[in-house]
Amino acid sequence: MLRRILAVPAGLIAGIICITLVEKIGHYLYPPPAAAGNGDMAAMKEYVAQAPFMAFFFVIIGYALAAFVSGFTASKISNTGKHTSAVICGVVFLLITIYMMVSLPTPIWFWILGILVWGLVFAGSSLALKSKKI
Image (cartoon, rainbow, N blue to C red; front, side, top):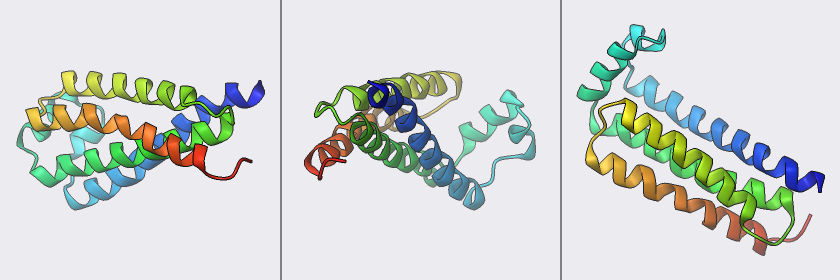
């Protein structure tokens, strides 16, 4: 029972780490203005409106990696043989992604990929379910 309870937070933490690492690389290559880092939403909106394709693509890569890793982690820890924990992680991340896309002026291709990429939780979960049980 404890494994099933801890599986979702563990999957979310693993996913957050992935997003953070990939976005840090993206911000190193395509730095946002200093004001955007200080919580200035107007500066962040202005940056996003003018950001190059690759700045957005790093975010999508982070989401994809997070989806896979969170699905794998949640399913491996829950050890139930089902995708339930992974799906919960995917839904939580999807809702956060939609909130961010509504808050910032993102292009339509980003909306499409930003929503579809969270389906990769199933790929991570499937790999965890096929691999040797803990």
